[in-house]
Every structure is written in C-alpha cells, then in structure tokens.
Image 1 (cartoon, rainbow, N blue to C red):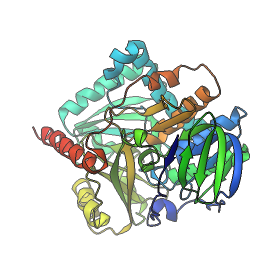
Image 2: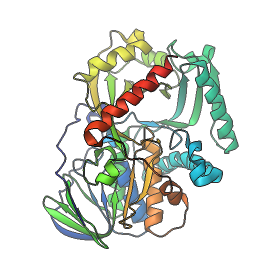
Image 3: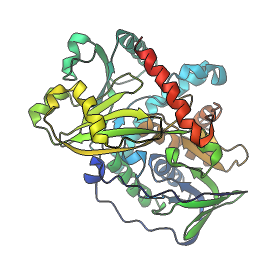
Image 4: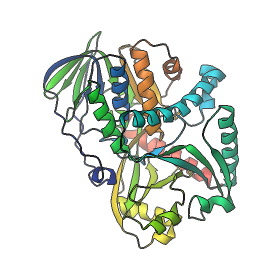
Length: 436
C-alpha cells in the first residue's frame, strides 16, 4: 500500500519572538540516498523529538525527518505554557476505559509536566523554565470549577502547591480588573518553547538519532517494512511514527481527518521596565482564562508581554495579527495603550473532536504509530506521547499507551473544505452560550 502527498508549502515564522531570541539553530542536512533504521519518525516538533529520544534511550536506531526546520510548527510557536493535564473533561471516557482508566489519564496529565522538568534538567536545556501558573475565572461558575479541580488534585496526591484566589486577591497575580478569581498551580509554568525543541534536538543527536531538515515526506510505502520517500532520499524502517499533528496535511488521510488545524495567534510587546512587568504579572506566572476564545499570556525572560489566543477554526488567518490581537490585550491591560508591539505571529494547533490527545497505531498497519490533536496542552502532552509510543514500540508493558489507543476518535465531517466552517459554527454556538 502506497500513500502519496505533495510536499507542504514553505511558510515563514521568522517574525516570531521565539525565532528572534532562540539558541543558535544548527544547519541540519536534507536526507539524501537511502538509510535503514529501526524506526523512522516524521515530524521535528515535540512529538517526534521526544519519541526519538525515548526510543534511542531504549537502544533503537532512529531517523527523524522534518519538512522545514526543527520546531517549525506549533512546537516552536506556541504560548510557552507548561500546564498540567492532557485533555478536557476526561471523565467522559469512563464508559470506554473505566473509572480507573480515567484516573490513570489524570495521573498521566501530571506526569507529563514532570517529564518536561526531567528532560530540561537531564540535558541542561536553557529554555527559561519558570514555575507558576494561574487559571483565571471570568465568571463565578469558573471559580466553582476551580474548587473542584483543587479538590481532585489533592485526591490524586499532587505534590505541588495549589491555592484558590477570590476576586480581591487577583491583583497579587495579574494587574487587571477583568477576573473574579483564580487557581494558582506551582507545578505548572512557562518556558521558551523553540529553545526547548532545539535543546531536545541536540539531546537526540547525542543519543545517536539521525536528524534531517528540509526533508518533506512525499510518499510512504506501507508494509511489514515501511519505505518513506523524500525528494532526494528514502528511509527503510521496521516501524514508522507520524508526529505531524496539525501539519500532517494529506500524508495520511485517515489521521488528518481526525484533526482540525486551528489558528492561534500571539503578539509580543517591546521590553517592559521592571516596574511595568511587575504591575502586569507580579509573580511572573503564566495565566489563561476560561473562555472558548481564550486569552493566554505571560512574560518573557526579557520582560516582554507575550499575549496570545483568538483560536480560529475558519482556516483563515487575520490579515494583520497585531491589529487583531492588540485590542484584546488592551481589554485586559488598558495601561499598555502606548506600548509598541515588536513581534506578531501565528500557527496551527491540532484539535480533536473529544479534546483528548490521539495516541495509537493504525488498525490496518500495526507498525505505524501516531500522536496528534493535543488541543492546547501540547507542550506537556507531546512529551508524554513520546514516552508512551517508545514503550509500545519497544515492547514495554506500561499500559498508558493502550488507554489512549482504546479511546475512539471521530473523523470531522465535511471533508477538508467543509470541516473548518462547520466547526466554526459549532464554536460560535459555544461562545453564544458564554453570554447567557
């Protein structure tokens, strides 16, 4: 069986603050000629890099192919928020994996952050990792939900400090009058995502992984041994891992139909004074509100406000991201009216219908594994996915892979042309419900 695809169109995100402030980016070769490996990994973001690291640590030979540059997709463009959890409303899956299975998913959502912590410490990756996060309540019912979350974290044995905040305490976290409460979590935080990806690429190379950039996969020959084609080379491998998420395009229609690429956008201000930065986020926490079209923001290491959100399901990017996002920032922080915007950028995150990461293997190609659709929890969930995939491929009996693989995932209706507009209508309905 053979799958063909056109190479993805080259796109640019050099306007991002992360690209401008990243570690030196190595020039990796494009694949040429034929290679053999135990595993071929497609995708040079967090999913692919961490799967490669975990496999190499288990003694397998790995070739990783990236269509553009390491961290080019969501891994190098996201909000940099490292938040506990792997999905939204995981209790809904109890009828499939049981109440104990749901509990295990919740525990893995905590473990996922610890994997990032350990990765950074083990390989001494300079990615500005900073601990401290706060969920922001837009309405009283959000705060009620936070109380339930805090109680559940205690029941799960969460070892980090959590604390509920009332409205009169919010200025200790955020210099805005917009919120009625919050939930502090000192086991979550924020980081420079592109530097994390680059550090993990270097770690993978140290472990013997062969990395190739500018090596878009053009065709896959499936079978007991897969043959992965690029413009100038091929990789033969016993096992294939697809870790392209929202950028899978048509490489595998079965998988791409289960992921909606949704646009998310970020602006970065000019560097703020120490007093300005402290007035905005006194404890230097990452924060996120609870709306469907959520706001998320934090400070960078050089005291810029990185303000993101406005998740778009329409498939169309704003013509001017800065002009689109600046009013949203000023609704939260009107005191920034005279502050310059230095960077503006966007990218695609992958969203599944049930908001649980999709981690599994193809039913008709049992040597083809995948991980995708992190729905906004990608920084941590990708690292968990890499561990679970490596355990399954190397024959370890961890159990976590099977829990994820046993949850069914709906294919979005309407095909590639109607999928986004239909979901955009659905999300509009949810936003209207917020106003009630």
